[in-house]
Image (tube, rainbow, N blue to C red; front, top):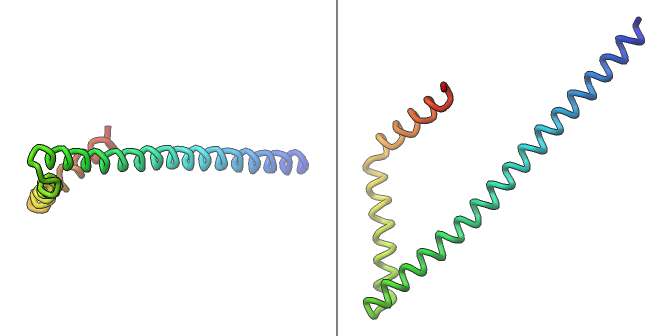
Length: 102
């Protein structure tokens, strides 16, 4: 009877180890996937913005102006987000709470 209990405990521990290994490997795989996607998207956004800046500069016959216009656009977004930070924070927090509770 004791041998059966020892064998059961050993098998249960092995099962828990395998489940933990599976969950860990799935988590690491998911994090790796999203990290690669995030880096690729970041490169896309950077290159796209450089292209937009150069295109605007081409239209204005001065590349510096094009890049400055794109930079000013992002500065405007930063200022708006800074002014509206409380409402944005509350909006995101409400969405997360609704997502968790549903």
